[in-house]
Amino acid sequence: MRKLAIMVLLLSLIVSTSLVGTITWGEDVQETGSLVIVGGALRADNDAVYEAFIERAGGDQDAKIGIVPAASGSPAKYANLFVEDMVTRGLDESQVVILPLAVKDDSKTQDVDESLWSDNGNSAEVVQMVENLTGIWFVGGDQLRITEILINSDGSNTPVLDEIWKVYNKGGVIGGSSAGAAIMSELMIAGGDSLNALRNGYTEDFDTASMDYQNEGGLVVTEGLGFFSHGIVDQHFDRKARLGRLVVTAYDNKEIWSHAYGVEENTALIYDGRLNKISVAGTGGVVILDMTYAKKDSGYTGIKVSYLEGNDQYDLAMNKAEMDADKYTTIGYEYMYTQETLWGGPMSPSQRFRDFIAFELVDNEAKSKVSTYLLDEALSGYEFSFSKAEDTEGYWGQSGAADLYSFENVALEIQPIDLMVKMDVQKSDKSYKVVAGDVLWKIAEKFNITSEALIELNQIQNPNVIKVGQILMLP
Image 1 (cartoon, rainbow, N blue to C red):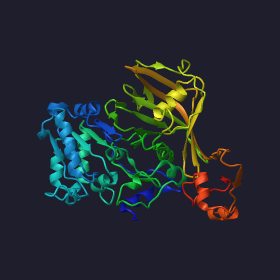
Image 2: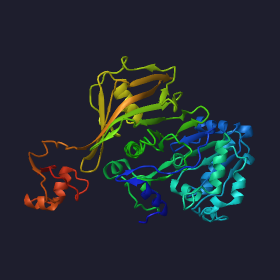
Image 3: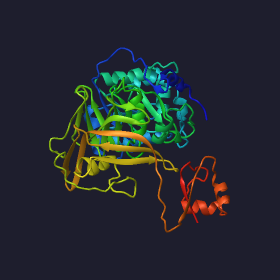
């Protein structure tokens, strides 16, 4: 384990237990460019996203694209894949350049050591390569590698980053997927999972030898590149269940940014600076958290959640959704009447974030509230409750036989919870309640049984974790 020097910034941002942004970003600039922020796992056949990027770069005749492969462990491979994606969509290879910005060598490219590019953020030659480009694309991987190469150790911009900013402020487009999305906001989420973020908050200790810290452990936040100044952005949002970690980060910074944005995979949040609006392209959607009236005690209350997809837009100046005019409102006209409570998970219907709220709540007359759970092996964790509020609205449409759904202002509450699973009484009519000081082998010895039998009967995943009050069935 090691502590990155960049985390010194984090210490300056922490007040008590909350992270508060104090970064100074220099003189205000008029944002005239566009952003194509992809939530990761961008498929090669996602024409809507690629075309949105190319169009904002000047179209297939005039676009001049620079690719930043710094985040990837295989910089050349993924940069060249994006070159192919551009050429497939009408650009000539001469219109696309791979910028030599990387910190990790790809052993498969034997003719070049990409790790030698690690100081190129300050290279005059690379600055010249960026001049006159109309679009910049950041490939996915580890977002800390991007900030490492484009932000100096003293926190100042490298000349290459300043030149990329010029591309943006002249009306160009900045795009990126996964790590390339995470770097877009001023405060960047770099790692951690939702359960640890809610339970333990932030961490300074993480191992960058692998990218495991991105998906597990305490919350890691640091400085991003700041192209999207309207809130914090998170990616891989639905598949990696990142709602919890975004809530923690957004709440601690809500006095700076009242809204936060989660982008689903194979989907782009598109920001047009001249219009100051968000639109969506791709197969999923964008989750918007309104933290204006959020409060924190043992959990979180007062959060409002909206979801955009397809032809929906969001006006950032008004903080107001502009839903697809072809959709019908659902509140008061609900199609479903489903009373059963659903827990969510791979064995349940409505597994997607959108579907869980749309089908089970906003288009369901029988329900005013639905809940799902984030739990550890001891069934301790958090309940996520979504409710209809006075200003909640759902929007339904169709594309062929497929349902289209959006919603706005669904109330979200997150509270700690401990659950107990009632065992099948046919397996045993005897039980034992765990008390302070108990360990599994002592309980087994007390009842003259083996630890293995106790583990199997109670389906215990981790024999070292039992909780006070937990009911153990006995043979």
